[in-house]
Amino acid sequence: MAYIQMNLLSQSLMRTVPVNVILPADKMTFPGMPKREEKPFKTLYLLHGVFGNYMDWVNGTRIQRYAEEHDLAVVMPSGENAFYLDHPRRGDCYGEFIGKELVELTRKIFPLSVKREDTFIGGLSMGGYGALRNGLKYHETFGHIVALSSALVLEEAVHRTDDDVFFIESRSYAQECFGSLDQALESDRNPKYIVNQLIKRNARLPKIYMACGMQDSLRSVNQDLASFLKDAGAEVCYEEGPGVHEWDFWDAYIKKGIELLPTEKIGLGMNSGNIGI
Image 1 (cartoon, rainbow, N blue to C red):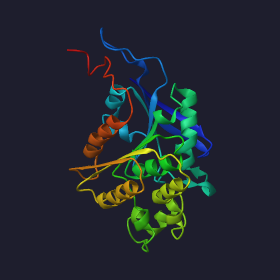
Image 2: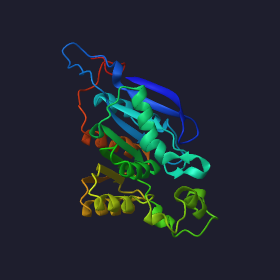
Image 3: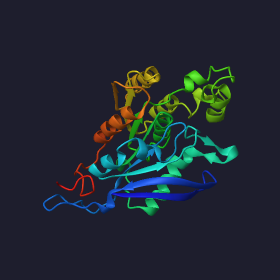
Image 4: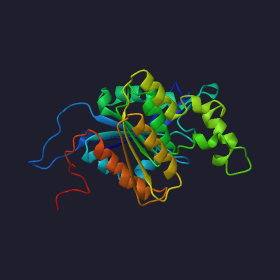
């Protein structure tokens, strides 16, 4: 399992940004084990939550093990606290970076499949929202979305009035992320709006997996979006389980989400944690 830390010069973000990549290209196999067919890797672009960075998924979950087991490349960028949206006036186009530029750059660097059905996007909390928004906006790129404990706060944020609160709950922060709150619900900041526009155009919707903890404060908004997606005719699987907004839940459910992706589960190769003893 190759674990690669690199820096990319992003035109969308107008700066050099760090990215982690898991690539099971160096997998060793035991005698008699099936060997991987030489072909481009299926890829999951995986987004962190607020306060996090490109290291979160590796530090908080067993994503390397799951990627190796499913022969899956995983690309993990940093998204600041910007909800993976575009802010062109300040040179921070995170949506464009995630949905277009990062995909193009990593496909140039690594042997990744260019097929829609082999390209997935996922995330947790803020990254769950980012996966839903950008997976839908760039629906011709991503065939599947995995969204865990998604921070679907936009409908609540448009009614915020107070700035004398913790910054992520303030109206000013919401405006920084989503732009004009008077217009945000009828824009591509809103996953529901994107879905409605795609349905009008008879566009292909990605398949969607959503999960949220039963004790998570975001449970109701995740239930609401899952119901909306089902009513709209989207192919969506929504699951709940015991848990709050924390890594034990995300480790368990990213495993479930990956198991639902159309990957080839060929098992772990030989490594320091799996040496056949």
